[in-house]
Length: 358
Image (cartoon, rainbow, N blue to C red; front, side, top):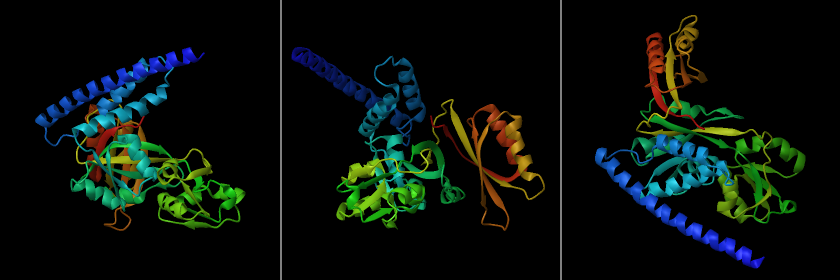
């Protein structure tokens, strides 16, 4: 029995040695590709979503098990993140602080080897990318429970940045503290949205424990580190970074709670074949204007996946519409539909064509 166990362990060691050699060989090829990209375009992004998507899809189809297919994306996300860091730092600005769900969305997209820059507001995220201090920015756009993030939409009105990608991040709230003992909790801290999303659980399980609002779930975790009688409602990442023990996992009232994030950049990504296009439109003030405006999407067989309206802030009762459609602006039918829409509205701005989240 012990000989069999030792034999399997030695085989794993041999395989790990091979994997390490191959990872280093792969990294050398990545470095050479980076040099060629820089020769062609000194300002080119090293991060290429189309290539990443092709790798994920190819390896997932080739996998015969028993290694789980779902884990391939996570493993190769870190391999690619580490490889890109060899070519140069991938600077990503996000709405901080650390351990928030925005931070988790960043890591899902760019891996743990990227250089993350937490900032204080959505406006600051846009500013960091516009000024070239970050290659990418990550901002929330909508939540399945709380709805659209209006401030993000408003920032696109005057910004020249493009949408480079999207990330769908599950929002899972955990109750945690330093000791991990529920009976020691005298106060709970969290962000207002997190508290609202766990209201029923709190009223049922801890009805007499006061709950205090703080600026972020990460700040709640920080307070719980210093106060043994305090608990936080925060993410799993927060428990890891701040050394807290999870008392109860998944206390959110709605388990289907997701936030969609947008990746911002000064440059457009390559076409992938599974893309989405976002547009900003200002409609003329007349009867049937919105119907008339959107009709070209249907006539060209395009699926509109989202529409939101915001006051233009330039004229009373004038609205700006934000529209997402399936397809890339370089596709003929998308291009024709966009041209028809443009002729029917006061102005149109293409916010970007980018890989749809999968």
